[in-house]
Length: 356
Image (cartoon, rainbow, N blue to C red):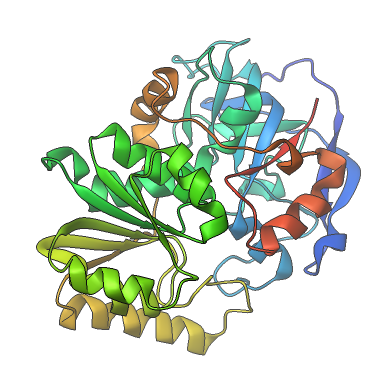
């Protein structure tokens, strides 16, 4: 490979790094080598904010080591908002000084360096990346990433919401990171949205745009809803996982309806160590749903980075907004606190690390 001219950037940076699997305390705020351009299609950004996602908490614990093996020392993180400080010669769509946001393409980051860092290398042709709209803050933009892409895959690609007239959508886990975007995406395309969440989060779900809230903590509420609304729903998006919601709510789907899951048949999949038997169960359950289920079942296993320009436009138009409570914004050095919150499954909307 030919030598690529390197910018005049700091040799080192501060990162949140792990040197092995473990609890939140393995996250160490240390100095590490700053990234350099590896390919002419690379971008180097000065990171302002990075979203924290459940997959990173699971990876840190080693729960997904069979699926996502890390090489230590390792810097987690995929989501970002930052300013371009350098770019390769073949990058034509972005300029130095542009503030951009998006997601790195690899679930574990290339060369052990993700976005929990002051600088990050972004492969522009592989990542989901766009110029940040001026009406969106760095924290709001840095929050989006994986969660908004996941919701988009399920609602737009699997559910084909754009092709439906007055669609009805159920969103399970509506107050979480993926759910907070999913409700808004469905509303942006004219859907009537039913949010499944706890009663204490009902106000948030309505604020996000939900037309109706199902409180899963009320005994038999979902079962009764399923009986009343048989064959009336176009899309069910499951951001929680497990068999229960599929069994309870799939009868509400129209014959043409779609049940799409971001987690699969194991609730909060990856929160405990994933072994060979868990993988086998997941694959066999998904196969069973697809072959023998009365309604179409889809599992989200890849993200639509190519749709980032359309997603960015919805942010610019104010049709999608990130919900990030003030007490869920942490400085990079306090990343362990952010991971503890994510691991609790009680975060509302998104959790974000800030570098400035």
